[in-house]
Length: 394
Image (tube, rainbow, N blue to C red; front, side, top):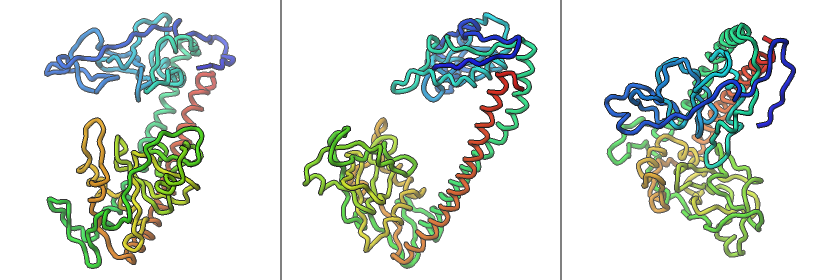
């Protein structure tokens, strides 16, 4: 990570991390360590408790996440914890420095930017020891840490409330979907069925589809006469077609796999099993990969938008969980998918439901966007405050 060093106030200096402290890696507890005698929370591991040994810290101390989702995270610890091999802890200080000040400056550095980007991000001491931190006198460190605590605590108090509001907005839409597909609020029996009102019926995906089809098994590339849509190209229920890779297909293969308006794609394997997307305005010659299953809705029986709503509902995800097989690689095959049962009213009621839910979804989307904008502004404010503090501006 390339740093830009700026002019510091009088009495401050730049110091390399290796001139400030040394760090050591923890050690993951064994099963024996985590048995009945376990008493210390594990940092950088699975969160279970371990017994006392050399890798327990009795705060205050700073721990730094080494890899995975904790990579580069900095935490000032004031409790007894076990540091696993997934984290560093400070072994020795070479200068006088306040832990509270150091934790804040290390967080502001974004250590994860120094990570080795492999299958999962990993940082090493070698990668960060050459980084510089601003080093003011102790009285300035104390003043800055106290000022930051006062300012950032206010922001950190607001952020969880905004995040909870985003979650509640999602829950509102999910709750509405629950009511839509069980309008009588009937009790669910042991088969997952429940009583439906008049003009509704249980229909399987096979019943309401013209085709349930596996995707194309060939590998993608930088060139070809068709776009090959993969599970990984579907993000937040959207497709960036310009980033979708190519594949070279014969005219016969194109005719078999080309995506059409109102097709629904279903992820059949892996951590995304059950994820789906309704295809709208596909580019010319777009096909779909083998880990996806295409459902071609019968428009005389079901609206694609109605089926798409069902695939977002809690009822649907309950069916997915019940039918997915495999532990390390959960999957649902086409035969199983075809048997999924859907509460299906007539087309007039389907249209009304789609209109109402589209209106609700639009309102929820606006609210979530406003909340996320506020979150973004607060995060930007935090960065600005930290930047100002470590330039001597607070």
